[in-house]
Length: 489
Ligand SMILES: Nc1ncnc2c1ncn2[C@@H]1O[C@H](COP(=O)(O)OP(=O)(O)OP(=O)(O)O)[C@@H](O)[C@H]1O
Ligand SMILES: [Mg+2]
Image (cartoon, rainbow, N blue to C red; front, side):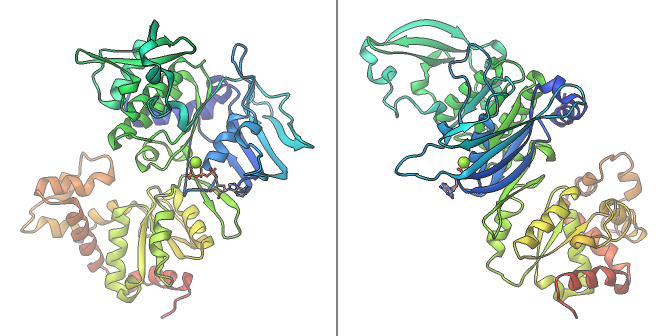
């Protein structure tokens, strides 16, 4: 099954039978008065939730509070994770939470009955309210899960002379295969070995590869973390809650992509709910929109959560553009929409173009949310949606010309077909694109045929399309943009 199919499957399993497939999942959290998060309501609309946002926006705070949502199954050393463990009060940090701090949890329940709700709050000097928590295995994989033992002066390194090896347990063959695939390393064997010195005992990950065997003391940092992470995800009881702190740490970009794909696979296979914090665009790019949550600090020092957007679409833009205070941000779906808009502005109203920067949002559904966020951040912003996602101008979003996706509007316009039919191209567009199901591939298919770059084809096509029109055809669009950003001709 392709990765995209796995993403769709995960979405369907969640919407159709969330409790049956994933157990008493956390469906929502309302957080009040923790660290830098005065108020935040967050809904979990997929078994995987990736929290993105600038440093200090509350990602780890949310993940840690989520870890405190359940009672562990019998046999676990800890009865549960406690809020007090993650938010210790000390003379150095007398107020990590407000006096009236609380977390309100909403859990999935069987059938279509009302979700279960529960509030954990600070009562006098203790945290209370845990009692009716559903039971569900919870694993928190933070930064210390794999600190190379050589750095933390662990006994397996510093008691090395007296170290005795005990029993060895192989990783499940399937888990070892996943580790090998994520890292691109051909292991012969992966195992955990019990070790002890005269005073202590522990376990050590061991790998065999290319005829050599080495312990985690000699593993790469990324390698060690992946072994621990995958082992936990494969051996935890089905339908566990797994919290991952920045799982991209120390991983090569390609390995980050494969790790994210593995997370979708394991959530599907084993019914886990996975909540992760991340700064990795490579990881976010592998999840569906319902799995991506973007946290942003508001000017009033609150925090907001928006589904479908990531730091890389908004914050990096704001930081870059903050230096041009009067600029206009135009949110479009993708590079083709941007190219078409550029040609429309260049031909119809070139002055407008000189003050604009474009932001490619990736999905049409996300454009209204992005416009709202950027306007809240005091940026002059307009959204231009594709023709197949109509908007009437309300909320700063209007539709590009036509009623089809812009690739279809442009490439099948008679003037564009004529442009490519002539020398030096001599390409019949209708025939070339006949078997191409996805319009996002149009420019690439034509470019491959002509041995040119797709961006050059898109630019030529958009230019021919715009030049076949009267300027007046586009006035309603350019006038709208000017009026929305308070800039009249
Ligand atoms: N006592 C406090 N009162 C108010 N704000 C606090 C307090 N303690 C910490 N903070 C804020 O909370 C932030 C920490 O939040 P958190 O660790 O959840 O952020 P994060 O999004 O995980 O950041 P990063 O990406 O750096 O890991 C700090 O950056 C700080 O601004
Ligand atoms: Mg953090």
